[in-house]
Image (cartoon, rainbow, N blue to C red; front, side, top):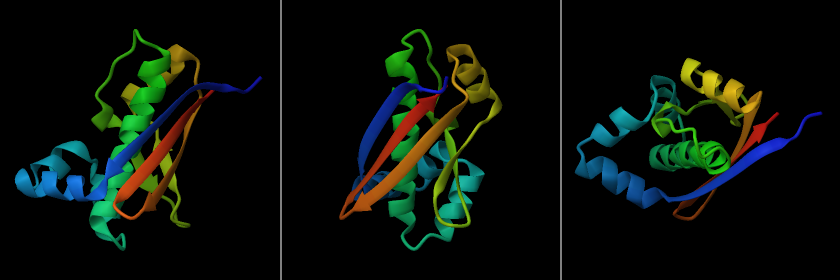
Length: 128
């Protein structure tokens, strides 16, 4: 039987992501996002809005896993999304996260992102 094992949500200020990237002279984006995410951001209509949404996903996935399974910890920067052809985000299962998902009995992570004004919000559900 399929079910939800954990849920995470995160809200991010788009202007704070931009300010952080500018203060660190690009180091924040370089260290936080995958190559796929950085490439997708370049083609987005709003670069920092896109990155803020992806940062919210990273935090939401971390919260869904670590909030429900307190003995598991990982680098949230390893969470990666890819923009599908219809614009929807898709969670990418890398080796580290596949091991974690297997350990906790999850088969996938479903994500959703929304933006309004200066805010980006994401939700993540661990699916068994």
